Length: 268
Image (cartoon, rainbow, N blue to C red):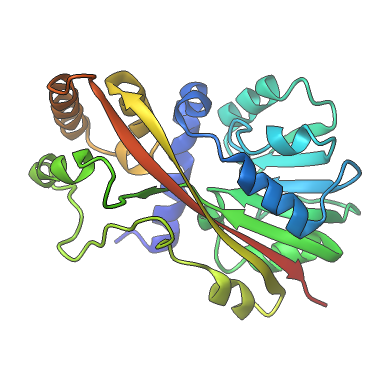
């Protein structure tokens, strides 16, 4: 039987296979999230940042635009190459192909370690001690993820398409709870249980993106579960999505996103 660590490592390695389309398909994060992060962590042009799992640089560019010096660590070689290409305009950004667990920072001490939709892929036994190790005294850790929300006034498409997921054995559990804005779980207890950080800010943000069939399927192609899905199941699902969206007058769907920004100060 595959253990949870092996399964996590296997899934996180899937993203490199879609490096070329990942940045275009995945949503950007709202400006208000970065504004809150900058204020809470005291980030400025002279700050030195370490990004965990930068992917193609979606969350790197907004902070690089402030003039920060950023070391962006990315496990996937193809994603790292894509990040270098997309971040070429920022000479103070360096992209390193490595895992956060093993990257050696040398004598460098960072003002901020941050992870955008990547923290949950880092080994739980290592992530907080490692962040504490590479931060300077008084430095900060910031983590957040982009998650699907289902507000009461949201698009019903996602509930309606569940019958197709059920057909292919990929449906949500019977006790699945559809979360709305403000409902996403917070990680304060987990962060502070490490004994290494004290949470100073928790902020929920949400936004909405509209997709046609092509752009929505491109998005699904960046999700680990869909990348790893059997080809016949994926083709059946995608055909059903195209068919149902074609029945809509505008052929589009609305997907509601949410994130919970956690900023924590290094203790000790």
